[in-house]
Length: 383
Ligand SMILES: NC(=O)NCCC(=O)O
Image (cartoon, rainbow, N blue to C red; front, top):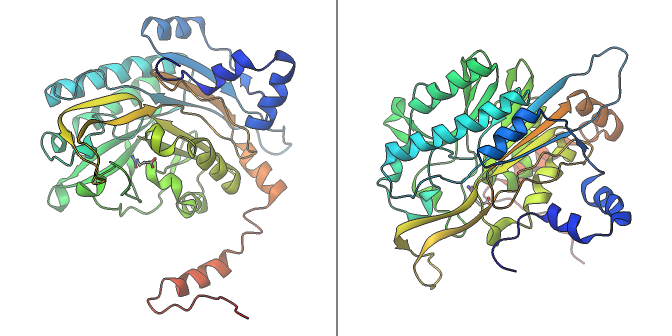
């Protein structure tokens, strides 16, 4: 095969006999997702601006006492448009322009809540372990230029914007955090949610730059539903998802930056399992492309110094509480995934499967409190 595989789905479509394809999709994805009828103008604009546009819908049963709670979310994945050694301000401006055009198309598709990828205003440069110029991409979550830019978008399109950035916290000595800023559709700042789990794996050297988040598991009540943001590596921690769900999240976004050799086999499993286990929708988003750094860096594994972290494989998707999911976006191209969901599905699935009711949280809380003690005695029964 020359180059990267474009997408798993297009490969299945090409090679599975038509008679068996629907059954394969039912087994793999929980059924054939309903394709959304997106406006022709949006499809043409996406084509003209060179990004993939896909739309799918999830159904819920009609209820007698509650009206459907239909919301459209937009997931945006993208490459960095400029080389990593371009001036910082020029790179940020180019990313703002790219996102602005993609959000414009999201608005044409009726998107109510949009989420961008992790650290979307910069290359994912933490692999290098160099501080400059990468730390210069950090901004105030409250009134930095990117938050102001997103507030304008939110107001213009009446859209909630989830903007994951590298945050500089001037209130506390200018320290850095990996933070998602949540902006209401009114343009007001709703708040921020910091990345709880920081990777120490492969070339993901993020712990050199920022600490584990201290904002807990906030849920943001928006006009369109209760949302939360579990940033990237938090995806591997089932309890992290659980705590957002405990606080009432109906949709949990998972803005990420991850590479094929490390995590691609985990990608379709983890967020989808979290949607099932927590009776909510989950939305993992991954960037695309390969980012090149002028100065080579090593991985501490005896291997040669290299200039690239790896191939970011995109494949953003939405998973529903009933275990169904949309196909993924491309592994290589910029894209916008629009998913329409009826949030009533969360309670309907909860009433059916009862994972919250049967959860035995009191038992786990008690035993976890014991297990974290330094002189914990594991409950092992021996002959
Ligand atoms: N950005 C980030 O946390 N990446 C770590 C790798 C992964 O979680 O797949």
